[in-house]
Length: 279
Image 1 (cartoon, rainbow, N blue to C red):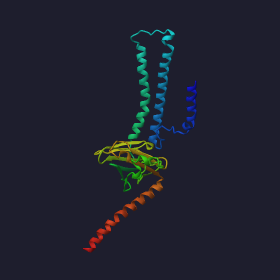
Image 2: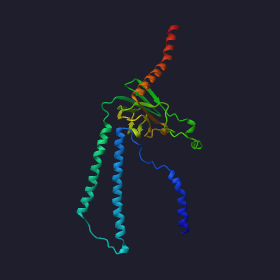
Image 3: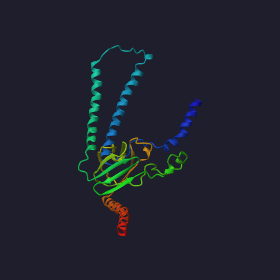
């Protein structure tokens, strides 16, 4: 009894800490039509698996309890039961058929990148991303912006207060809200994976191949992801940040990026003109 009281006291003492602990172990909240379908499919199959678990283990534990040796139960001796075999073959078949229909519908929708409003070519490198906006003439690179002195130093990790540690970039992928964005994804060196869970996108980038996918952000905001393939020693330092803006704000961003690109190219033109004049 004394041991039980000690255990009960320890559990009671730990309840406040348990109440403060995070229990959000589900996939991130969906923000696009495809990710909503994926999330719904995930939850439906989860409940089906839970029902199977309850039924199977319920029957098993009931059988162990009701037909235990201490009650004088005697094991039946039979070789085959065709009815039971038919039942346990049909039930899994029906369950899989019911799951297959929405799963196939979701996969087909994920692959339908036709009629996009805009196209972005994504090229993966070790360890950065290149984005070419084929419709708007904008080109940018995105690399990790977390300070290097915070990485790989265990004694410093306890001091980090940035909630987006290793999930921040120097340039975000900016897209307009409500537009269908087609991505053409490839890689320059090894296999990478462009993965943003809230957008419902996880597409490999393979050298020599171009794979396409799409998403449509229905809410303005910032969505974060990472490379999903083990692409080298700095695989964990290759984040993706997508920023969805209103069409007006997106148009202003495009104008700003074009101005920056023109300004970056201007010094070279001036030097070239100066050399020509001197000659």
